[in-house]
Length: 98
Length: 158
Image (cartoon, rainbow over all chains, first blue to last red; front, top):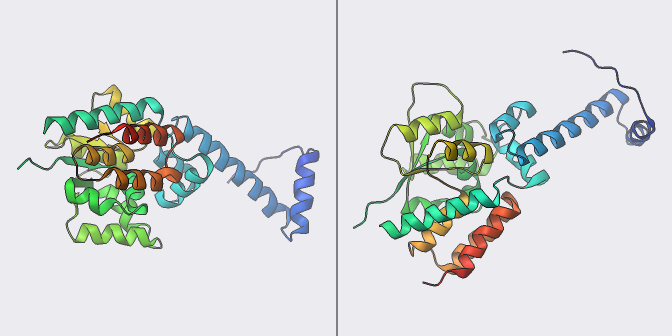
């Protein structure tokens, strides 16, 4: 696993101070901030349809249930109006056929 | 008697319908099949979730059929392979990326909410129950999906 050097700006310092007061050591705090950022980024990619649920699960290294819980909390689902309307039209067509 | 529609269900729809307690009613009116990989993702690898155990029970009871596959690919690829093996009307998924792929390849699809609306159209679900289930789905789906499905249900007159 590689290491990354990041310049600390004021907002990072403030968040780290806050976490330190909560009893979280600096290394764990930085890891936590990065994890939260990754979750947000993956959720946005999922929302835009750039990645699938399984892609998200692979990146987050979680199972599908855990991944769905995170994605639902962050962005809900990602089916757009157009896709849903296509599905609804098919549902009606199939129901009328039989 | 009309034949029951056979569909391939992907993991996300299976999980959502399980969470909102509508899987049994959907399973009683549709022939649900999942590839082995989807069963592993939903029922086997998530033992800590009570809903995962429920899916396993549905599989054991024959409400959901698990199809064996000879490949070990990702769930959506296996779902696609199962659909292409023949006899299925469509694939059910709530994953935009997968749905766009299905659209480009002219493969019919439904979503979790449109499956419920299909049962409404077929008079297998009452309007009130359909509204209840789609409201239960709301935390699990996008606003666009929710609004489109609910608008369709509200317009529906038997």
